[in-house]
Length: 161
Image (cartoon, rainbow, N blue to C red; front, top):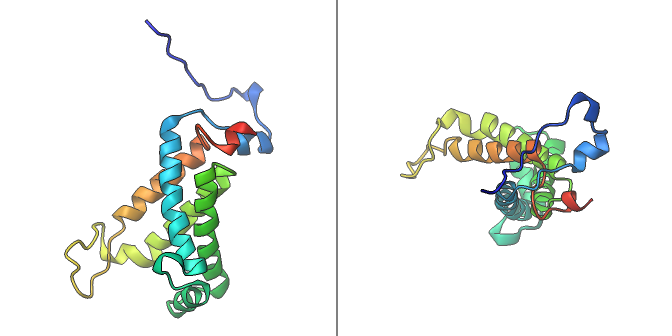
C-alpha cells in the first residue's frame, strides 16, 4: 500500500518571511488546473480591454465606458490591467498570490457594482433589460481565493523559485 504524503501548514517555528510566503506553493495538480483555467479567462478578457484583442473595445473605449458608469478613471485603468496582468501571472504561475489577489479584487468589485442587482443566476434566456447575476463571478472569486491560499501549484514559476 502506498504511503500518503501529508502537507502540513508551517508551525510557528517555521514561519516564512514575506518573500518565502510569496513564492511558496503546494505542488498540487488541482491548483495548477484552477490557476491556468482562471488565468486564460482573465488574460483573454484583459487583452480585450487593454489591446482590443478578441473583439474587445481596447483601453480607451473600455475606460471611457467604465467612467460613464461612475467608476473613477484610475480604478477603470486598474481593472483593465488587473485582469490582463493577473491572468498572465496566473497562466505562468509567477507571483501567483498577487495575481490571484488582483483577480479577486476585480471579482468583488464586479459582483458588487454590476451583477448583484440582477440576482444570483445568469440570464440564460437573455431577457431584455435584465443583466446577468453573479454566479459565474462568484465561481471565479472562489478560484482566485484558492490560488491565493495555495499558491501556484505544480508547473509554476513560483515553485521553481
